[in-house]
Image (cartoon, protein in one colour):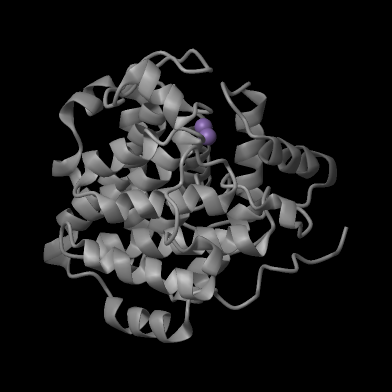
Length: 340
Ligand code: MN
Ligand code: MN
């Protein structure tokens, strides 16, 4: 095992001209607009959980199987290969909540070790679902105490992206290279891979841009998707529609970007992405955080919120407010991102 994470301090993937302009424009959030930002952060977190709960029914199905068994799937009904209760979420939301708790307990500081310990405690509670790469990374941390795995192109799964929202919220308004470093600290516990990092960075950019954008302004997202695709061409949504996207970050994010760009509004985008089947709980979760941040709490279907497991719903709401409260845009602090 090398003695330093080889990818941690590489420059951001997003173009420097983009993040310098963004950092200069963002500054400190106006106090009179704080309620709106809290609402958007909460909608992002609930969007993640709703997408997870909606999509889990269809995980690992082909689009053809989805159509045959469900027609168009648009209700939270549980089931799926995990035989879930309606409104039950999976590892995507549970790992996010574990990471969010670790950040809260450290007063807003993102610590790789604290996050790895939180993931390890979550794995001990026998989660309903856990990916191979995630299990391998957490097991390695238990053996070695090192909260990052070696660089490996095989780690280009979506497991670090699906749980990154707490870091995205807690670092809102921090200089972009610090946001990116914090993302990698949590991501590399299980996924150390330049392509997975680029995907995580693109999703974080989308969520943070969406939080600040006028409500429903999809053009703001299109610009970020185009820039992300210009530096990481694999992520471009151009070309054939993703059907049955796997857990490979490229397929997952192409499906998410295509759904965002071919629909209008939170519910339509969510229905589009999960009905593609494949890793549907995770495409739903990732799309949910972006679309929730952009469209806000009013856009979340009430009938879905009613179905969502009440404890999960409360935890997402509470964490969203706490995490955005730690963010430099709100607190005004130039918070350093700690490793230990
Ligand atoms: Mn899952
Ligand atoms: Mn999944």
